[in-house]
Amino acid sequence: MSIVDDTSMVDDTPGQEMTEQTTGDAAASSDSKTIPDNKNSGTSVCPPDDPPPKPMSEEDVLEVMAKMAKLDAKEISVICDGYANKLKSMIVYIKNKLHVRKDEDELVELDRILRLINMCPKDELFIRSKDKIWHARYHIIHRDSQWFLNRDYSASIKKDNKQRMIETLIRMIQAKWKKMSEDERELYWQLAFEILNLVANFKKLTDEH
Image 1 (cartoon, rainbow, N blue to C red):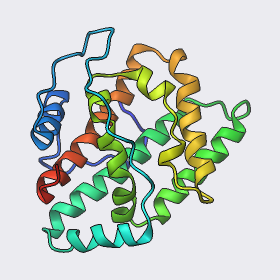
Image 2 (cartoon, rainbow, N blue to C red; image 1 turned 60 degrees about the vertical axis):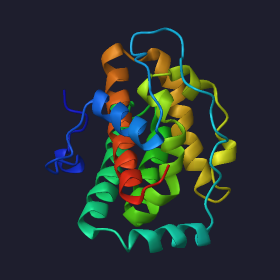
Image 3 (cartoon, rainbow, N blue to C red; image 1 turned 90 degrees about the horizontal axis):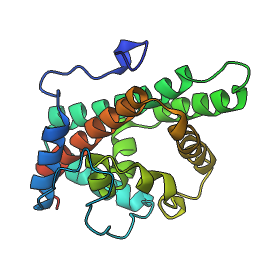
Image 4 (cartoon, rainbow, N blue to C red; image 1 turned 135 degrees about the horizontal axis):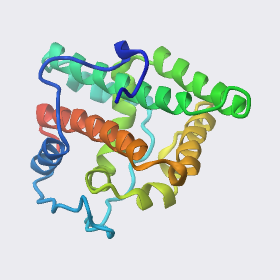
């Protein structure tokens, strides 16, 4: 099943295909922890969370950019391009499920988020959000939907004019999750696995733990 109608938004770079298992392996090897299989379990076996990452300052972003400049430019481009494409794929999938008239306000907000992603440099987009993905890694691997539905995201969202759009996206997914079919939920998890895999690849390149 195709996630988006515009397949140009999906990263088809050779060597980037992955599975849930390889994502788990990558996260586990980067974090030096063993992750038990909880795919079909109704309870979470995730370890206790670290404190949630705080929004990054401009100085923080520049510091990471300086580190990235010392790495292989092609590998970094594959990661950052793929990351932005997966985020856009997720948003387009949400858009395609909305009604043109009944959900007009939500569609407008999603269009704004897409424009924001397209305007933001891909390396900065990746840098500003990668730690949030890594913080959620065990909950992604174990499909721990309750963690995502019930947690407070306010500490991790930068207090600026972009905040309302990010909060809107989170709220949309939370509101629609219970109404989704298993196939629809699986598409969300698969995108989340792919996004996490890109972050894990970056951590391997930079020896982050």
